[in-house]
Amino acid sequence: QKEFVETGGGSVESGGSLRLSCRASGFFVDEYHVGWFHQAPGKEREGLSCISATGNLQKHTEAAKGRFTISKDGAKNTVDLQMSSLEPGDTGVYYCAATNMYSKCVNASGVKWWGKGTLVTVSS
Image (cartoon, rainbow, N blue to C red; front, side):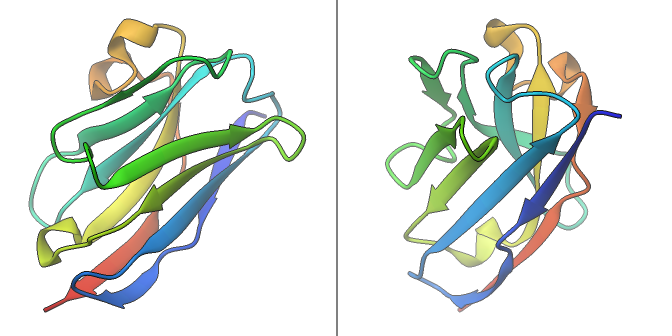
């Protein structure tokens, strides 16, 4: 069974940082493009950052540019999202997801499967 498990969520003050980790089981992160998504309370899930299967390509949406960094560790079979300069608007559940199409890796419609998410709360 292929699945992701996200960890690293928690509570942080505005301006703070968190590092989220997504561990894959049942497959290798080098087989798929992996993205991180954010769902704020009452809003749709939106893409943040994605890293290609080979690890040599990345893309970030406007919500993530300049603040978030994505990386992968093939030996640990993980994809991490380092978040900095967090704001209350970053509060919500963060999910990682796998896709076969790099062109859609920050687009929820392109996702093959999702992790269960980890909650981040940013206080002002």
